[in-house]
Length: 113
Picture (tube, rainbow, N blue to C red):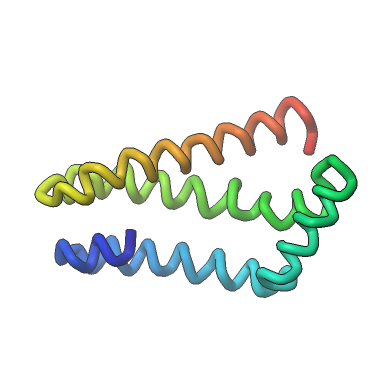
């Protein structure tokens, strides 16, 4: 999304998207980085259920990054309609973000994860 915003000349949207990305990366690094995520994913696969470690790592993405990205993409969509690429990519991005948000809300509300 950052590249698309910059290509279209929407530098403020690119800055916000970059800040969301950097915040997510910082949080990931703080929790042990990509290697820790992969270890937790392998451990979850080995046990056949999502472990607490894995859930805590991905919870940040689904409860912070996904909603912020969804809101930004939804707001910026009307400003990016001059690009065919954005017209095709943004709805997919919004759908994936929405799925992540809905899944996180469901798990936190109904499953107490």
